[in-house]
Image 1 (cartoon, rainbow, N blue to C red):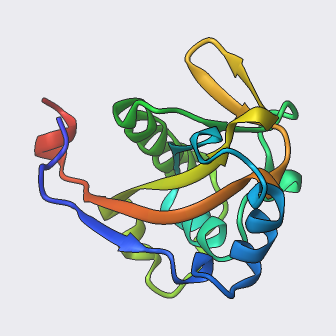
Image 2 (cartoon, helix red, strand yellow; image 1 turned 180 degrees about the vertical axis):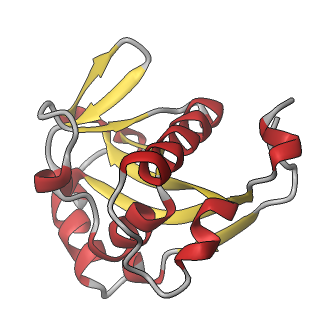
Length: 150
């Protein structure tokens, strides 16, 4: 079980007037508002920082079908833990100055996703074009051995 104490930080790179916002807006400006849905993406803290700044990057996809999202935050949290564990076990040396804090947190990104340009694979939403998702905020959970082992 994870700590109930978490922070939500809005993504300043997705505010109106930014490149990310304008890219997404051009895709959805004439759509029915109900065709945009909130979805979660679990990843490592280091990857989350890059995604918040630049959006999803097709060159960094693990699966070539698209960018994977879920409406189940618990599943996204599980993916974040797996990514952090994978990075700490197999990844390259950290490149960021505060990388010692990376393993102490788990990040889940909340996206606006344009649903007509997605496919469903099981319970997952797969967005085939990076322009059809906008990283709105990040939820950061402190990682504690006490919570991870429960």
